[in-house]
Amino acid sequence: MDRIPILRMGNFLLVTIQVDMHDRLALTLQDDLTNRISEVGARGVLIDISSLEIVDSFIGRTLANIASMARVLDAQTVVVGMQPAVAITLVELGMSLPGIRTALNVESGMEYLQETAEAGMEIGVYGGDSTED
Amino acid sequence: MAATVLKTETIHIKSSSDVVTARQQVRTLAIELKFSLVDQTKIVTAASELARNTLDHGGGGEMDVAVVENGIRRGLRLTFRDHGPGIADIKQALSDGFTTGGGMGLGLGGSKRLMNEFDIHSQPGAGTTITAVRWK
Image (cartoon, rainbow over all chains, first blue to last red; front, side, top):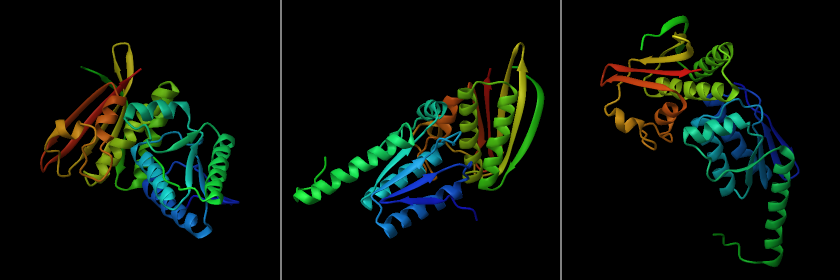
């Protein structure tokens, strides 16, 4: 069965979804990404969806699941490049992707991941408590 | 509403790759009808939700996608048929957040919002037919 490739760049994992995903392919990506995060100790995941012509509730839920699983494994997720027509449709569908960090393009998505990774390291250095609210 | 059917195609929905085929077929006809990109996206997204329902809740079925004309208006009409268990409470099924399948419960209510006309016929034990139209 086909798979979506996951690239590694330093502490980050990069995924570009370029095909019209069927549901099983989306679930395979979710499993593969979760495993890779744990294998390589990734601090961030960037998912580029600029080629996706639709995001329906299933794909939206899969993205949300990936972000939650990544967070549990101490990695941040950012979804970048959503087409405007997709954004309009998603909101009308009733999904605003709560809990998913988004950015307009790959560049600002990477900036966000780098900043959060650095901020995380500082907390480690100063031994500050990492309680969040 | 007496809409004339100008063209119709049927896709059998038996696996998750058929849901992709259904989306692509709907996209092709939406482009042919010169729907705007936002409207194309809405129609294809609704088709995706409904095709998945046909597969997951209806145990498979088929989709007819038809180019229809009503006076001066043209539109795209999607009909999904399955012979699954049917929907016991349609009003409840349409409300956001209601789910029997472990999803988010946005499929039916959400696709209704994305289309102009939306109609559900269902009999418990006999299956479900959903018709949705988007006009230009």
